[in-house]
Every structure is written in structure tokens, then in C-alpha cells.
Figure 1: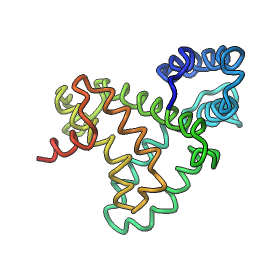
Figure 2: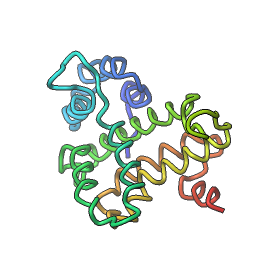
Figure 3: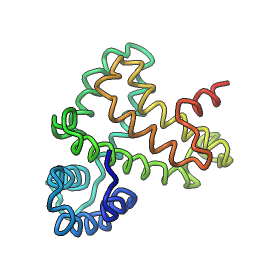
Length: 200
């Protein structure tokens, strides 16, 4: 994968939708004019944040998908096969274009968008309300939150992919989650290694 332009790198690092849009427009009007995936990047942005019924309201369908996958992982302990179609649909909705499977530029744009959504999810994990214990009364320690963050990241990606035998369909999504998790850790530990360490 070639190195991203500075504006595009900033776009994928930013988690605020309005600031992201400003960065994307600046990129598209200048250095991004020759980017074969420029329109696809904008299409992902529009799908992710815009609500056709309420254009003035910002949503985040990627973040909602992350939460849906966590919910489906928990529900798929019994009769996991009933969730296969739903997870496949989530992947199709997120990808938006079949070229993510055959074109490097589209693949990179999709993976980076997923990573941005996971980054936003990780940001919510820092809040006091994340992973409360005892019916939401007691706050978790920093170590407990980090463990739960790892478990969430694994379950929303490799965990549900393995359980439902959807490794191929979720390959890019899982790669994006794992990469964002690794980069979020000061020690650079991989998601697979961290997950195994927390299960001991």
C-alpha cells in the first residue's frame, strides 16, 4: 500500500464528522483529483454519516455496525448459523462497492474507513461509562477497561468471523480492526496476542 497524502492521513486520523468532511473536500479539490478511489471515499463518508430522512442530522452507520457485530457475537453462542445472513449484509453495506475485493485503491479506502470507525469506538472506551460493573454503579479500573476493549475488538471481528465461518467475507474488516488495535497500543501488541493473554 502506498503512503497516504498528508491530507488523507489527517482525514483518517480525525474522528469528528464535520472536520473529516472539510479535510476530504480539501483533498478532493487538490491532491485527490487523480485518486481513482476519491469518489468512493466520499460515497463511504455519505453512507456513514448522512441520514436521507434527516439531512441535518449526523449519524454513524459504521459505528452502529461495530456495536451490532458485538451484539450478534453475544447472541450467536446458540444457533450461530441464524446470524450468517445478517453479518454478510453488514459487510456488504459497509463495503458499498465490489471493487474493494479487486482494486487496491478501493481496498485501502475501505480498510482505512473501518479503522477510523474503530478508532472512534476506542475513543468511547475511555469514558467513565464504559464497562461499568455491578449494574452500572461501579467504574472499572484502567486495566479492566483495556481488557474489555481488547475483548470487544476481537469479538466484533475475528471472534464472530470464526464462529460463523465468515473469515473470507470479513477478511478486510478483521484486518482493519486488528491493525487499529495494534497501533492503539503503546507496546504494539497484536490483537490476537493480546486476546490470548487476557484469556489465560
